[in-house]
Image (cartoon, rainbow, N blue to C red; front, side, top):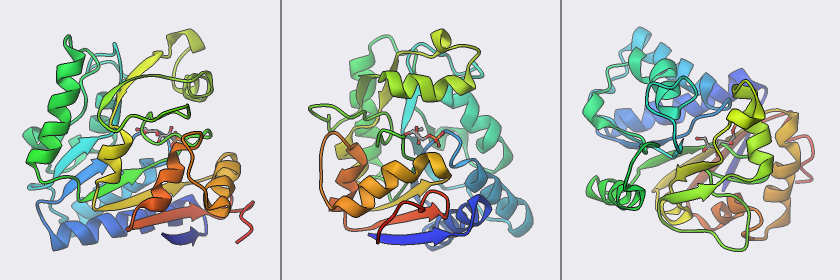
Length: 244
Ligand code: F6R
């Protein structure tokens, strides 16, 4: 695991963007796993800037998002579909047919999840997976618990996550209680993983992750310690409780 301490959020975003851009240049048909939330917003802005100013080419890039809320349609402004198009996809030359995001309105959700994993496999797996981390250690929406599922599945969000994500909604009641998420197995099969953590509120979980050297379903991100190619980009605020 490589740990890069960035000066601040802007520096973290530029560094994450640089890794993604360099991999796209090496492999123009890169299969890119993407996250939503606050943390990767700056990375998406930087990628859009590179597209505009340097012609970074997304025309052959294939993307798979980690997760989507159950019950929210693609045009719902709180959905991750909407987020991805507003913050990234509509500003670059990615082909709509190369974009994959779980469908929160799928009727046969089990079959939808199975097909999502099959589609990832059909593309040869994820080359580079971008991740954020929840305060409770969740990655995607793989929440802490007694067991973690390996494949794409429907999951119940924990009260912690519902509370954390309520900042994007008018009230806590509006936050969906379930989501579709890639499983830990799908994430761990990515050839390379870049985990981003920014701000003081992530300092506790990052210290737990990076200082304890232990794997537990109580901290889903801890499984990343077993992956052979993970880069953690953490800003100084999120790194302030690290002992190492
Ligand atoms: C979102 C996702 C989540 C977030 C995590 C951190 O697609 O997979 O695991 O990465 O909840 O969210 P932020 O970045 O808003 O702190």
